[in-house]
Image (cartoon, each protein chain N blue to C red):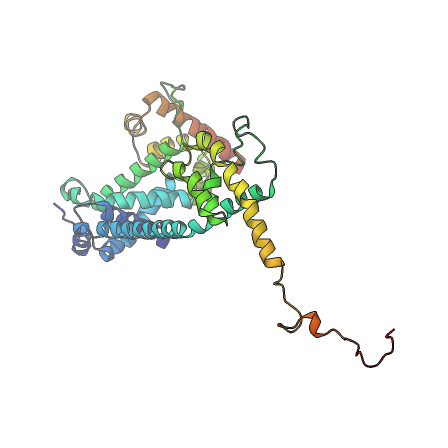
Length: 180
Length: 185
């Protein structure tokens, strides 16, 4: 059962009836929120546009299955966009199963450098990571998934997920040193 | 960027609505078969028209071949002397086409009737080896006298008689008179 804010209800009703105007209003309302998530899993805006288009088609098709008692509409949309972003990276990059590690050593990150950088600059550095490493890093450090969840979503082992996270930190550390 | 993404979403949703048989009552699908039927019908008409006109224009193309064979036969003198049984088969000059060409020429009908009796009832391709040697000489032999007679008739003018008819040389003869007594030199 859909139960959201009063001003959302008419939009959702229109979207459920495949009303194009209502769907466009819904899209415009959640565009910025979804685009911010999509950009984390993409290298540029065109990648993000691919993720967005696929995600919103999926949203409109599966809107009937949305249950407000299980979580907010934002969380539901975020989950779909994140999954679409991970699928996008999976389709673009084959994950190597040959490298696995059991423990991830914590790299030394200079906080004063991070404090001097804006969010956009940090995200640009993150986008320079290799696609698979990028996906694991964003899923772990930004979205908050653990290695088991990441391994399930990306069809990789937990050890591979840990290796990618360690690799991401190592590369970011070098990039930060170069930046300073 | 925002509008471009929406255009993509809208296109994908429209495509899904069009392919889903449960939506719209299958409205888009009937529009496809008429287009295919129309194009198929047009193609059939074009093919039928082409076939019809090609069949109409094909008969006038056949006469030049027998005519060429006829001219070759009439101008070639060694044909009657060569024995057909020992002559190798030449696909470029089939002997079976002679009877077919003969009726179109000035050959007398009796000569043609003798040679075409055996060919008229049988297909041309099957009688190529058997009938050609027996048929080939008669039209060529009979052709020459007929042509020569016509040429004489056309080239010799009718004989005209000179002078006034009914008069004889005696009517013009001058006879000296017996009373003059002088000699005529």
